Image 1 (tube, helix red, strand yellow):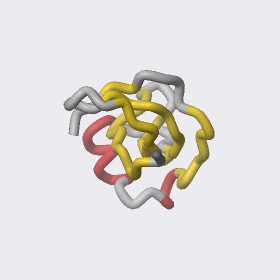
Image 2 (image 1 turned 90 degrees about the vertical axis):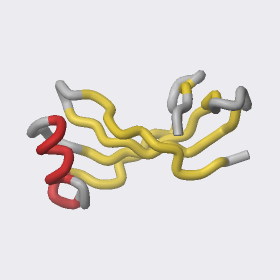
Image 3 (image 1 turned 135 degrees about the vertical axis):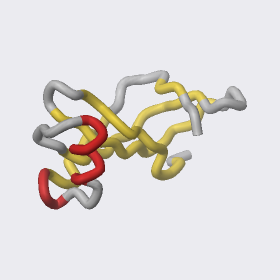
Image 4 (image 1 turned 180 degrees about the vertical axis):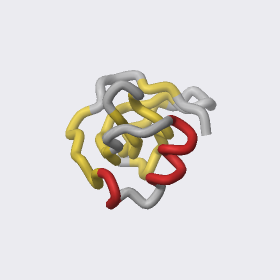
Length: 77
């Protein structure tokens, strides 16, 4: 699902780091080696139908590589 983040991500928490990430092999193969972390946070997004919703996002991040595989985990409103 495509969406656009329209606000800053707030309440960012680290869920997993390094070998505790299930998809670590995939991340290293596709994006390269780095200190991978799985994070979550909440923000407002604009959906393809034009609705703006408050959501919880999950994504992966590594220094020098950036945020990858951002997905909506659940709707908060």
